[in-house]
Image (cartoon, rainbow, N blue to C red; front, side, top):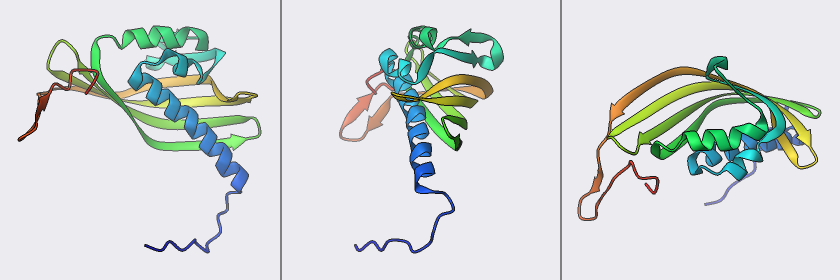
Length: 167
């Protein structure tokens, strides 16, 4: 297959695209850290003094507190997946804004139930020598539902339990 470069021009300067991609990388590190329960990777996403408002303001954290607290709250779950939807990223010098929907799909370890939660996240990020970091976050749940789950079975191969964190 031959790929021919586009002749159209973008109204977004290349530098802006690189910065938006770097901000997107923070979001992807965050979702990967949640799914893998990686507190160190989670810490890399936030400034230590970040102002983090979760569950519509019911829970507040600093960046330093968040990683260990939130990763430990995932203990009841086996498989976890965070999906990103409709990200809007704007960059202005050394500050950036991110507005995104996240869908968290989480299978309970001890019962055959999967929980699906959609949240809207708005972040303010700052550029540091080590890269972009979230300095302020507003996390607002939008909807949630639970559904029964079952073992995954592939004919001729066998099955596996989606409640396992190895799924």
